[in-house]
Length: 473
Ligand code: UDX
Image (tube, helix red, strand yellow):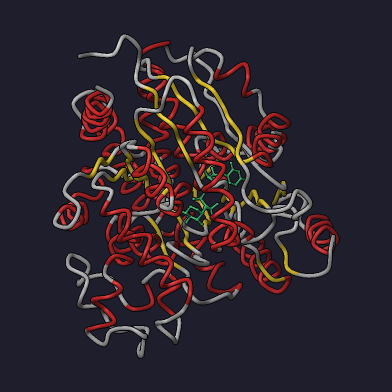
């Protein structure tokens, strides 16, 4: 018998910007079709969302959209900077979060019909199993990262890991034999010891997410059909619903018209002065340089980066996040100020940007990026070519997709050299400008097709919606 209420879905993301952004966009997509949503924020993130955004006004438009808060298992005075979220994966901390989750699920009304859970919080599978709640896993990083992580045991067995020669093509990951070298595997595959705690954690969580039997990926058939086919050999029920920022925009525009305000779920204060600066620059003249929400760099790296940009003669907009330059407290402020004073006419620096607005600004001609998966998809949608400077995790593999599979950018992997950067910026902004602009525009078109009526991501979202309704019966 059908229930006389709408399906109630609970979202449980890893509480970092890169994991939260796609999750909350999916929550909004489901709210748009009338689902009741409970979105679980950690206390810490919820405070920041309230401080830096107008969440109440935005989500109030969806009757039944509710935020609830949960512990991240760490003490209130924990600094939560850098890779702090790794501490959430420790057993004792997980136990605290698990207990908080269980209590919430037991007491919540109406009861939760389905949980959408970040792959890195798969301990929620145990709670869901115990309470009989169906679960769908969401892997917010790239499909190639998922697939290589899934293949780690096979790579170890074949003697392909630990890595002996960084430049050797990998052979044991089906579908990735032609373009991917050992150097392009996710950074944790570089460990010398395959008993490394993080490798074991990634493998365990990847395999467990496959057991959940329903996996959401932020990509599209039109962008990554071949790798999705490989993943489906092991995990048949994949919902590829990306690029999720574009899918949300497409559905919101269809329902409310294009003037509807698109919302940023930022956890830091956006410095919007960079948009006024971009307004004064010629079309496609600016290189936007930004490295996501958790990377950090040394003072030396920042200086190489700065001179690479300055010597390229390209105008540039650089984001240097608070506390992202390794060194003494506050030291980066002095370095940044010193550098800024040297090239005021050419560059502009902010500590956090409204990234999607920047990428879609006509003045932006290239994106120097760490290749985080959200940043990658956001720039694909915007149709801007990339220069990739990956740091860790999935970024190594993402950047190979950009440079060798999609051919919409260059990669600067495992080097930090102002001359190389200068050359690459010139190549993308001057020497091969039209070639890259053309290929980036073609990719943007494919992304747009995927989220438009009849496109694969559009249809896959409808399938997900119907399947969740079925789970709720
Ligand atoms: C991390 C991993 O690095 C990434 O590879 C993984 O896929 C998700 O988790 P992060 O490093 O923060 O994420 O990068 P990314 O995935 O690009 O996400 C950053 C998000 O912050 C993007 O949505 C971006 O638009 C936003 N952002 C970043 C801003 O809004 N302003 C900024 O100044 C910088």
